[in-house]
Length: 277
Image (cartoon, rainbow, N blue to C red; front, side, top):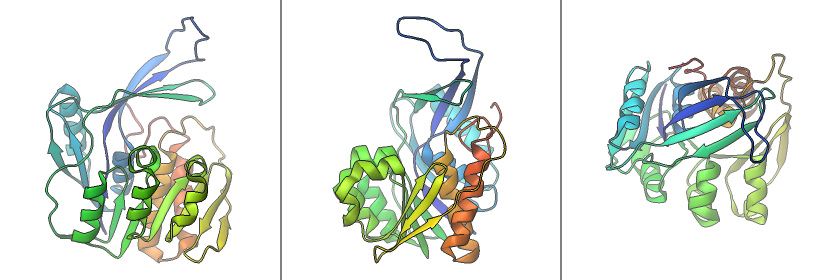
């Protein structure tokens, strides 16, 4: 199977704490680790475990960018296709305490693909973070039987409802977290494709094109939850992989749940880099 992922990549700096500092106070970090991150990269990395992946992204021309490109070049089954711009690569700081509570700080940076799109054939296309123009262009140029769109926080902030609705008209599935769906409010009714809403430990919700609702039980996580970063990205990758294998939504959601349950019981935002790099 061959999949195209359009998204962003960052250097994620993890700071592990016993607890977060109170206002105007200091705590000492237990340790610091670095991972490849960004929702697009997480989806691409997770898919690369069992599929060949073309990952389209952008980056800058500084030391962070070099770090990102070097790490991606060493991932099996992943083909980095990127555009370079003047400026820094993206950096994100993730603070996690002993109870797996998080605080995430983005420093920004160049992360989105802005290069030329060629015609290509894939088994699936996943659009995560992307400029509207690029997203619509890849949908038109790439021949794919399965198209999945996961707007995430980026899509809600930059694309707004109008952009999300425009892109969703051309895809087979759109995936939101419960909080993201709540932010859209009545705008959710304007989306005509299959909508999947992840809800943490609560049943995953599917609203099909006719508006009919289906619920899928989330299995209990037997191990301790360590880091929920990337859970939605792991879900998305698992769903795509399951759908390509079976073509059945129920089986695909089950595969998605398995991926998500694995990533939250280890440190790091994806299943490939569950170790310090």
